[in-house]
Amino acid sequence: MAPSCANHQRLLSYTKLLTSHVNQARHEEALSLFNRMHSTLTLFLDPFVFPLALKSCAALNRSQLGKSIHAHTTKSSLLSNPFVACALVNMYGKCVSVSTARQLFDEIPQRNVVVWNSMISLYSRSNDISSALQLFEVMDVEPNASSFNSIMAALSELKDGSSKAFAFYRRMQSFNVKPNLITVLALLPACVGLASLNLVREIHGYSIRTLIDSHTHLSSNLVEAYGRCGCLLSACSVFDKMRERDVVSWSSMISAYAFHGEAKKALAMFEKMESAKIRPDGIAFLGVLKACSHSGLADEAKEYFSRMQIDYGLVAGSDHYACLVDVLSRAGKLFEAYEVIKEMPVMATAKAWGALLGACRSYGEVELAEIAGRVLFEIEPENAGNYVLLASVYAAAGRLDEADKVRKEMKERGVKTSPGSSWIM
Image (cartoon, rainbow, N blue to C red; front, side, top):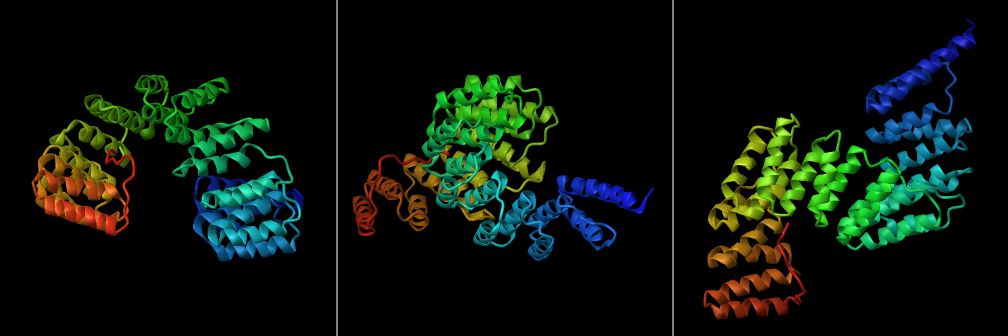
C-alpha cells in the first residue's frame, strides 16, 4: 500500500474513532485523540475533523484550545467551510461569550443556514430573544425548521410567551417550512401555558400524520400536556399506547394523575413503575408528593419522602420540601410542617412558607402565621396575597388592631392587590 493511501486509511480510522468519542460524550478522549492526530505530521486533517474537536471544546469549556483551533483553521483558509464556521460560533458562544460569537459570525465569508441557525440558537438559549428575532429578520438565506425551533422554544419558556410562540409557529407555516420533532417538542409547553386542549390535539394530530408520534420523548410530553390541559383520558390513552416507557414517561403519567387529584391512581402508577424495574427520579417523587398533598395523605407523603432519600439516594430539593410542608399543613400538622422548614438543608421557598401561612388561616394558628407572614414579606415584598392572608388570620382571631397594622404596612410599601392569588403547585 502506498504511503499516501496508508495515511488516508489511517486518517479515516482516526476520524471514525473521534466521531465515536464525541457522539458518546467522551470528550476528554476525543481531545486527546485530536491532539495526537494534529501532532502527526504525516496526517493532513480535513475540515470534518475540526467541528468534532470544537464540539468537545465547547462541552469541556476548553476555550484556549478552541481558540488555537480557530487560529489553525484561519491559517488553513477553512473559515469559509460552513461546518467549521458553525462549530466555531458554537464554541465561542458556550465558552467565551455570545457577543464574541457574534463578532466571529459577522466575519464569516460564507454563511449557510446552519451558521445562521447557530447564532440564532445562541441568542435564544441566552434568553436574548430580541436579538434572535432581529437576526432572523435579516437572514439572507432561506430559513429551515431549526431557524424557527430555537426561538419558539425560548418563547415557550417565557411567562407571557406562549401566545408569541404559537404566533411564530403560524409564521413558520406561512413560510411553508415543515415542522419536525423539535418543533412539536418546543410547542407543547406553549400549549400548556395557554391551557389549550385544542392546540395539544392539533400538535398531536400533526405528529400522527407525520409518523413522529411514536417517539418516547414526544409521547411523554403529550401525556403531560394532556394532563395539564384537563384531558386525563387522552393522557392515559397516549401512555397506554407507548411501546417503550422511560422514567420521564412514568413520571408524566404520575404527575397527570396528581394534577387531577387522583392520588390513589398516582400512587398505584408509581408502584407499577417500580415493578417495571424503572428507577424513579426526583420528578417522579415530586409527582407522588403532589398527589399526596392534593389528597391530604400526610403519612404517605412522609413515607415517600423518606424512601426517596433512603431507598434511592436522591437529594430532596426545595420543591419536594414545599410539597411535604403543604401536605402536613393541610392535615393540620402545622408545627411539624414548621419543623420541616427549619431543618431544611436548602432555603425554604415562598411555596413552603405560603403553604404554612394558608393553613394557619384555615386552622386559626396566629403565632405561626406571624412567623410565616413576616418571612414572606421579605421573600416576596410585592405579593399582596401574603399581607391579605396574615391580616385575615388576625381578623379571624379578633385581633383587629394587628390586622389594620398589616393593611397599613401594605399600603406604606406600595403593595397593590391583584386579581387571583394561589398557592396551588
